[in-house]
Image 1 (spheres, rainbow, N blue to C red):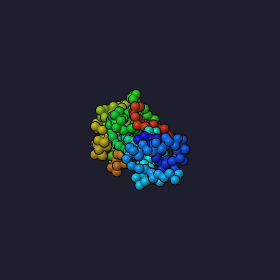
Image 2: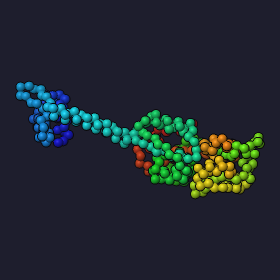
Image 3: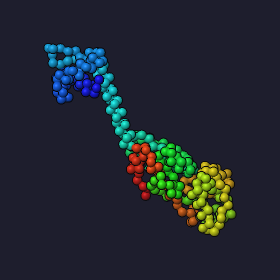
Image 4: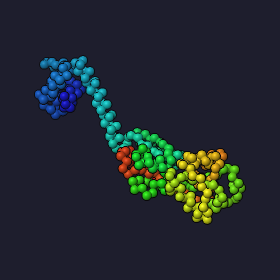
Length: 295
């Protein structure tokens, strides 16, 4: 059995006339009839009722069963091929996206995700939260295809590329009952006697160093309690163990027992979409091509 024999059978079953079917496939009548006979011999069934008096022919019950079954197989094949081509082109499949575990998903991030889903509904987006170090590790081993992370976390890593997402305001997070909140204006120097809860250098060397740099710029070295990761940092803030510098998207900012203040010394931090340059997922290129930076 080969594809030519199958095509001959399907065309003969469609037209119920060997002469017309042979002409439609540009095959000589003897070669066409031989292909049908070879199929019948291999399958050990008669596919057609033959009559020397009539040019037309009819399918036998076995032939009808084979025709219906092959039609269904062809439909399945065409659907399978279409799916495979969509996956190959990156228009179908799945993407895994990592998010900072301590940050909420804001409207701007939702816009990026919804825009892609609206244009490529056959690509399933799955979201996963992780610490700063986990996001980098997941990018490295392709556990996630993209990470929405801080630019300072991916700088100096040649195997990572990124595009800007949007800047996030840096704020000071503190107890909603903090005594300094009664002041009309606040600066970072006002908090020189406070305990700062900072992520450990093991979790994020860049973020860990940033606190020290910002405080020393205004003339003091902070007293620091280190949290193993951003989730523990939020927990310590909620427990009233100190203050912290974080992004305005930090979930601690929206805790009823905490609040945040904008300080003139704190600069925005850039959020980016980052990926491993060797990521093999075809959908990754589709996501990158579809992304338009948020103004």
